[in-house]
Image 1 (cartoon, each protein chain N blue to C red):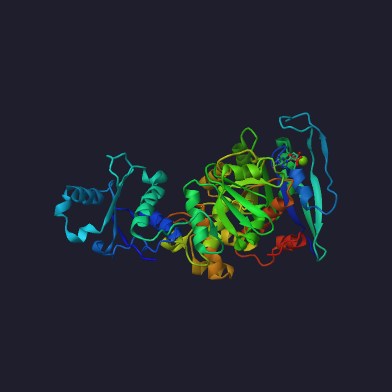
Image 2: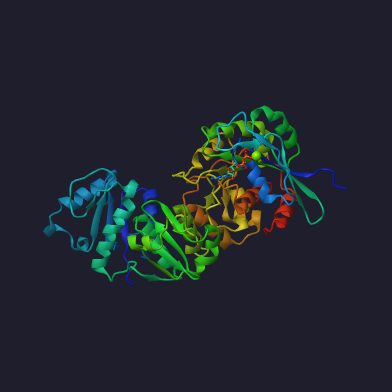
Length: 176
Length: 326
Ligand SMILES: Nc1nc2c(ncn2[C@@H]2O[C@H](COP(=O)(O)OP(=O)(O)O)[C@@H](O)[C@H]2O)c(=O)[nH]1
Ligand SMILES: [Mg+2]
């Protein structure tokens, strides 16, 4: 009856809050595949997503919205691309405390260029708590220099309202 | 209240508009700037911009004229000069650079002068609620780097720490939109107030950007009328998406944003795009203006490859499932 599933993809580098954000929305206990970190252990955590996180929300009409969290490490890119195929929107989470979050931004907008160009992408910048003087400015600057006008919010992935705001912005962006 | 007209010698349009907004906010019924049709002789205050040819000439003339020789029509005019460079001392000169903090400098002087020639019409220390004027005075206080406390029912408060460009509150800005229309009082916040609310150790209390409060003022102050700054433009375009996690908003603000970031829009066009009321849209634009989110000269339509209006948006169904109603 409804062949194309509705998909939302949470992506971003290791430790940006993908798993946490997906938890905020999923109605089922998300299937999370974490493993002890051996690579990229620069972030203050000992486990990380190596394969896909998966969650679900069932709509009133019975349709399912599938939530995917991509692996953080870049050598899993092929998986990201497959997951993103036909996705309604990309929720890109970036950790503001990372060494070079602008580089992360460049990397993921390139990886999901189709979505970015269609405005089917929203950015949540995590770990901005201590930041002063409009931490979002550098992301806006990078995006607008390249002709993108995507929503960018300072979010805490642990806060459900913040994650919902990202979905709201995505919904609005898709309504021309 | 008596009104005072002023005339600007050699001011550029932009500075004139900024000054007009400030004057509007402190409640003086001065005509809007840029009103070049006013006869200078009908104005009681003359403001000269010494960085312009016209302003310098005017000022030189005024100085050259010995007091005794001044025309009678001249006598009633207060003359104020300002410059972005340091200039010779004179009790009527303002030396602060205009663009940095000069508008408030001009206002300080204007205030003093107006106090002398009319009944005091400035915000008193304790202002009671509801009125445009009390909220307007808040804008001024923030511009003057004064710390203030806003008091709402249900023991809700917001402390504005203007010096550090932040505010503290015991409710998330998401909820302010509900509380703002019920503002009970605005009063100066001393160090003791900050201490007694123990802002940094009170678990209910968090710091938010000063934009949160400015945005709220923009939303509520003009009640559907264009703010003086917004009135200077017919077409609007957003520089980027507002950071809605710390700005009190209505779900429809997201739709408005989506239109306004992508192309320049007139109010009428937005009404058509979104089917929202003129007042609702105007308040939103005033709020964007208050935190400097609008392009001064809207121009470029974004060259992106979006699909035309989609019929069914599955994300709306998801949102309603998540408890959000658009
Ligand atoms: N301080 C802070 N911690 C956050 C924020 N967002 C997520 N976290 C935490 O960051 C850690 C990494 O999050 P996780 O979802 O596992 O990241 P992932 O690798 O992208 O899946 C978790 O302990 C989260 O609780 C934020 O905005 N601020
Ligand atoms: Mg994870």
